[in-house]
Image (cartoon, rainbow, N blue to C red; front, side, top):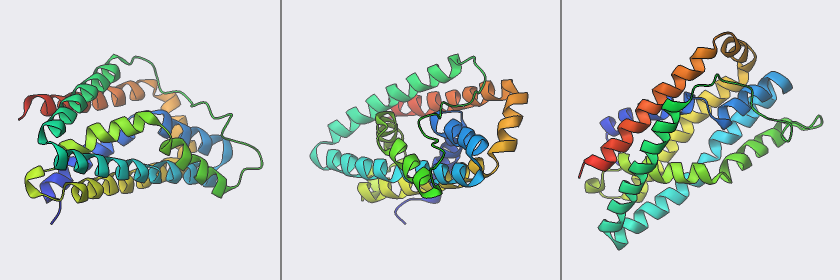
Length: 212
């Protein structure tokens, strides 16, 4: 197997919690589902999730190229990625606001079709430079260089991330009305989701920085 069961389990646990934590993508999915309807919210969410495939390709090519060119460069990437994840964790732990509706005016034209919402979701994710940086920081730490086929491992992990994001974003889009109302009644839930994701980021970053 390219990726062990232990790798998959650890990766999926972190990926699901990170995907569930409040962020621009899932808040836009919820907001669009509430304002435009289930079909549009679900389509936008699936587009956002599938947009991760472009970042997976970049990560797979970049990480494999670094391994082939210089193990030291790969180590430097992991250290930089660890520092970035620690920074994300600190930012998440410092977050004190409640979860609010995302700004969607530029995304929700009255005549937009479901297909157009899907395309917009994919484009919003694909051109987001922060997602590129996140993938380059997050995926490599679950890659076992000793197993070889680094690019294939990265691609498999990216595919797993995309699959779980499709499920979560699709469900958020479909149930966005009820979910958005629940978040509105439980403002502290958003804060605790940020704290959980912050601890995860800090743990992953520390793992990259401290382990050889």
